Image 1: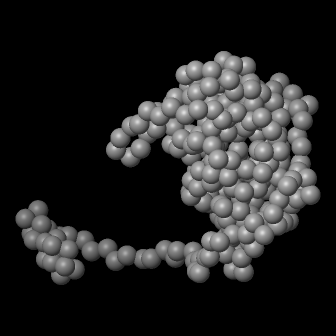
Image 2 (image 1 turned 180 degrees about the horizontal axis):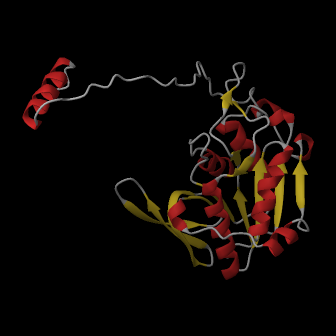
Image 3 (image 1 turned 90 degrees about the vertical axis):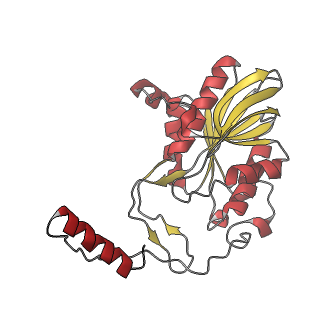
Length: 265
């Protein structure tokens, strides 16, 4: 069973570092911010397209967020994906990674006959890397994280090299499976003007709450067990600068005395 349908889950992230925190919800306030596709997710889209060329398979993009997240879905379709799904409803707002993973997993089930699900290793705005593994658990499928290479190694299996901090692992998983990928995996292609134009002819479906089989107790903030007790923006601190004078030997002596005074040596 070579994959016939590959789902790539993508996220739209703020294009700027000027992000504020909502004091009431403790979530990032994304209102009015321009968004881009999460860079790691582009590697996942590229890998799906490369696998689809070998199979062939249909590449479907999936995202959860406000209506303007359709921009990132269109970008992915301009890269070559065949279709996109956007999960957009106020009931999903304020979800942590568990509640997000639940809704995404339910959507994947509804798409049906999905053989491979790809994620970027993490989103650059939250950096948790949790949603991919959570979705794998909800789908009861094998998972591989931090894949730096990925290939079809049989009609019913994939082989990945998992790149960790100080070691490498080669893992084999049976399909269907969930994989999160690293940026070392590939170089994402740029959409051509023609493909950008064609992307608007590809289907983009928006699913709301009532379009999915959902347990309301697992949605949004109410379904999020994560408790944020305090959120603050770090304030820059001014540091005192002391110049060392005299000969190199005298300067070295001054430095040693200063380090001892601050109990650093």
